[in-house]
Image 1 (cartoon, rainbow, N blue to C red):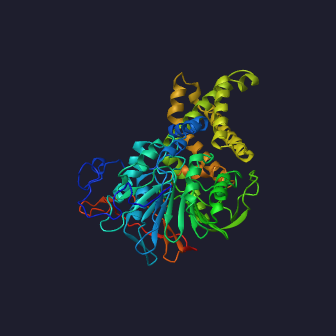
Image 2 (tube, one colour; image 1 turned 90 degrees about the vertical axis):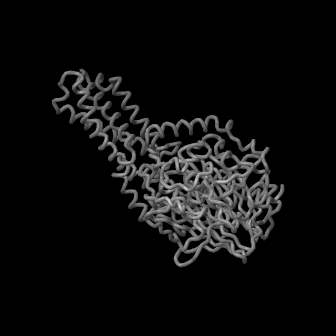
Image 3 (cartoon, one colour; image 1 turned 60 degrees about the horizontal axis):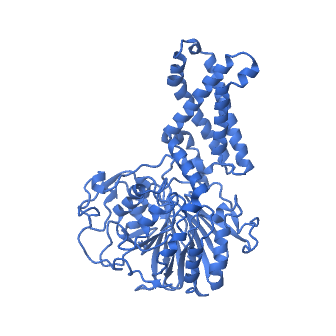
Length: 579
């Protein structure tokens, strides 16, 4: 395996002066926000509770579970170049690296982060932090599913607008991306087309250098990045293991490693003790024989910042690149990694890692959680409409059953039974039981509450004169009056359920996904100094910008769109120094 310097199969490392890049068939910089000018559509935040999206995502997930092994393209990547990328030689002996993950959602949040990443430098608390020479993307570069159009509109377009071309006379920044689960839903087809082009690959001013969905990068001062493509709890495929085995032959006992993974399995192992097994296996079998020290594990997937620290390494989750914010109120004060309950017989010794910082913090996360009452109905109108339809049909079925004779006949009215089964099955599946009794109990409790609401609505309906009107009068009144009212009440009941269940680590993700909170974004700016010290600067942005102005007369490499309201990045916690 060769160590490839960044010049190979790519534009020159130092970008020469050149005319302003149009980005689209020779056009000049855009003078408006028109999609025809920008070359992409500015998409709004995804409504994660939209019925069609829930159905589509559920079907895609099911298909991946059933047929994912047949669509796994990692085995086929063995035919692609298997080079290690060398960024170890710099004029000053140091290097700046940016890390961002979970970015391809709504334009405002995604572009706010991209804009900050693209600036020549950021001044944070009086300290100047230059733009990273490398940009590492940690997964989920697009939402909700991978496709060429969604990559263009939700990721490539915004990042091209942030850095249209490489600045002249300085080292050209390079982008490497690790796929997340949303990148995987098409079997990595769109991901590989975008990030693993053989010639002249670039996204705006960032050039793309990788050839596979995983990669190894040699950095200055005996540092390395190993990015492992381990998805959906799958094994690490043999070609990938072979690639890293050959890369590890160049790693020595004095080297230190930053290990990128698509998911923070050290956190998820609290619920699934076997979640961390693949990462632990990789560390033991690939990096262990080198005697190099894995000093940092970093991942996205959970849309917040959280750092746990131990004697041997830092465990960092930083998934604040643009997707909805996920609260940290349920984060434990410490983790045991690997978890003692793992079934792996050869796991590493469990170590204790203390929680050092979260963003947003627990108090702010709890405050955000209470916003569920107004954000869910406002941002998920389709879901509220679906609830209204289900409750209206259930009420009519209950009212019809009540008019029949005999208690048994009422109870087993076919339309009523169908609606009750639909409600209970939907709420149980919504709780994602997957063998977890706690989730199952909350699912049944939620279903019982929704059925109780339907029964209460039926009782009120039966007290009103509409029931005796000639048909289809009752149906029309139910659709026009009862449906919208019960939709609002059912959505508030769902909000109460989410708020309570989240305190027990059930549907915590849905509590925040349903709200689509765009604030509290985060990314990492890391610096490897000439003396070998790695300093991690966790950067937070409390408020993203929602109003943008074109900059048609800006420098060729400057951002196409400027924030009307200034973005104010800040440190999430003091810089973390790692030796």
